[in-house]
Image 1 (spheres, rainbow, N blue to C red):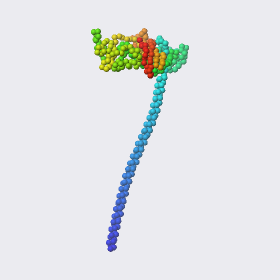
Image 2 (image 1 turned 45 degrees about the vertical axis):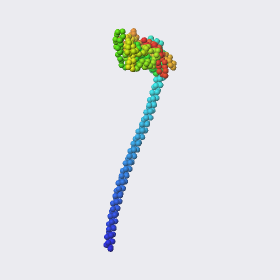
Image 3 (image 1 turned 180 degrees about the vertical axis):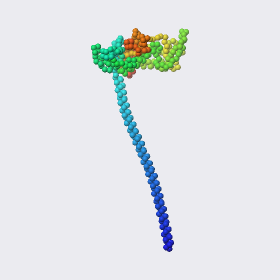
Image 4 (image 1 turned 90 degrees about the vertical axis):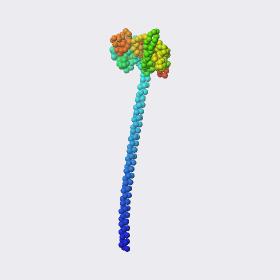
Length: 359
């Protein structure tokens, strides 16, 4: 019995050892599993933490960028506002700027320009020629008040001294005078074009038309106008001058029965204008002029225009002075003829209503 009990005890002990060993292995495995699980959890947490850090960095960079852009935009707006303010100041100054010019009762001579007060004569200024007053330069026996001035000549700026007795300030501003000159330029072009051909506005290409008349045949050239019809051309003309100043009748001739010196044809939806003449027209008008505003009301402006001519008694084309090369002509070779003009004004726009054209 004792032996059996002993064997039983030994077996139970052995079983207990195995159970303990098995339990030990399970415990170790559980710990390993826990370590692996905790390791994975730690790794995931690290990844999450890193992602969160990256997100925060990205957001911070974006915010810094947005703040920078807003700051730059505000500074840009301030700069633009300053520029706008400067532009407004320039525009206001331009609008209010008065023009100084040479005053005269006739066009018989030039105002002397000297190299100093009462100094040597170096140039001459014509009637109504504009000058920029730089400063008062004192007085002398021959003039109570001298000005040092700038003036434009043939694209260049010159400086000299003139007697203030013959310099006036215009009753209107520089911007208004510029607009007046723009419409006078258009009227002068209309007049010049009609002297030999007819006024056509802007032109592109040309068309040759065969004309048979009195037993003769010749090829006549007509220019294609920028305007499609005679009505369009007339409408444009009336934007710068009164209908009473129109010198050539605005009417279309029969293209199917062309006659000598027909002025206008409408062909295939386009307007064509005569570009040939049987007469010559030549004078010594240079195309330059100066203006004086004599009187001005809200709607009516009266002007005097000093047209510039080469003096026929002094021109020597062999010597280089001619209409095609006026830059080589000395000041004394020019003379001026004064004519009158009247403009009407409506909402800041000008139309010439009366005008004595240059010869």
